[in-house]
Amino acid sequence: MNFSPSTRSTIPIALASLALLGCASVSQASDLPAIQREVAKRHDEALKRLQDWIALPAIAAENRGYPEGAQHMAQLLLDAGFQKATILQTQGKPGVFATLDAGAAQSVGLYFMYDVKQFEPAEWTSPPLEARLVDKPGLGKVIVGRGAVNQKGPEAAFLAALHAIRGAGEKLPVNLVLIAEGEEEIGSTHIGELVHRPEVEAALRKCSGVFMPSASQDVDGLVTVSLGAKGVVELELVASGEKWGRGPLKDVHSSLKAMLDSPAWHLVKALATLVSDDGNRITIDDYPQGRPLDAAEKAMIAEASRRRDEAKAKKQLGVQHWIDDLSWVQANERLESQPTVNIEGLVGGYTGPGGKTILAHRALAKMDLRLVPDMKLTDAVAALKAHLAKRGFGDIEVNVTGGYDPTSTPASAALIQAQIAVLKRAGIDPLLWPRNAGSYPGYVFTGEPLKLASGHFGLGHGSGAHAPDEYYVIESTNPAVQGFDGAVMSFVEYLYELGK
Image (cartoon, rainbow, N blue to C red; front, side, top):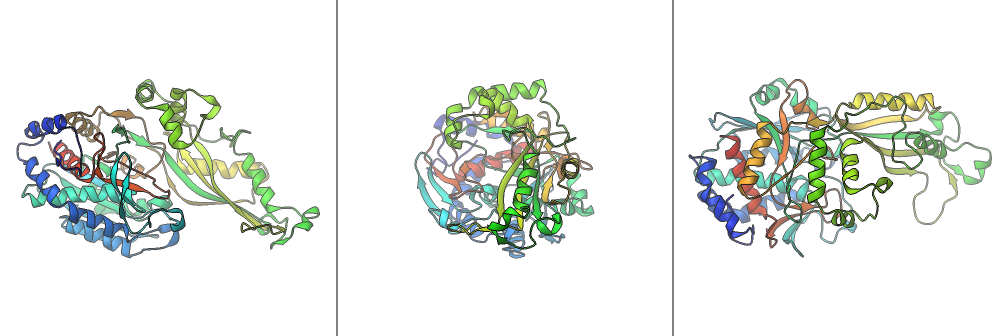
């Protein structure tokens, strides 16, 4: 790969030289050194574009930043060279559909999200919307802000690649079809309304696959190529005196517990039936079963476990043991193969300072269910509802707030092979990984009727998604990790590889 020799994207000299010598193998019609110079020249304007974007959050859970978030997304795409960027309305938040016709033989799809997770400013050491550059030991200068790595940083780097290619007078090697949504952080509730519109489906059918820009390097520079992602169901379980017909219809004095049922305990007892006593195995009656790991997937996990540092992973997570004291390989196999039932939060009654002796009339559990291949959201929800009814908890409301099915793409897909080719040409030996344990709505691309390959790509590093002090590396001092300009060039190279 070709990267700026400045500290903005530190990389070993031998690797940079290898990339420059290999330019012709990427595309005979491209001048990658010229594009690289353009990336460096445009660094400040690209950084300002990212900072301005972080300052304008769209948060679906709070109904904040709409329709401005979609409007800003559309303008960013037009500025980057897309000829059309149309805001599409849904029953929820709007999406954006954009196309860039470069007159190329190949077309590639892109999935963007313009929304971000909620944040509590008091938990941050740097204001979450100011997008400050901060020195981070071992990494260099990072941008800190909500959405910095999830996903505005990588998406801004991709858009910077388009600006640089055009600025260098080069021809984009592929046509682009992009769909951006504003509800990813609440489970992509209406993504199907965007993707399955006739004009969007027609454009996507011409694509060889769909990818999402990402920052795929860990702090050691290791890159993982994931072949899919777990599905997810986000829901709330609500117990109330009104629905139950027992317990109070409003909060009452806690002394009355001696004669009244408690909706909060009712919810707790219901939750206890969903999993084993240790909370680690799903015990929902007739719950759908996922596909077991095959030999190839087990081999991927074994190799990844060999190359990843278990002690470092435990330190990063702040844990001392895996479930059942499993070995590192077994823990990773469980991570990849097992569906989960997780409690995100419990809310009921008084939660302020000190005590308040009440008997709560209502209690709520925020849940997420992760799904593995061969499982479907509709089947999981149906089994949960039937289980609760069978166990005497049919009054508990099951409110699904978002989610989607798992996604999977074979390693042989051209979209994935192009990633591997670009990484290996840069001297990076990537890990193949069966699927992300987290989720994204790739099922709308990989499932019926499109059946497209889907994945993530992009060098660079960041962390803290959904957490305080989320960051994305801008100027790297770590030889193993790319800064912003290096991430931009990784997208340039990937586009030319996809256009071959």
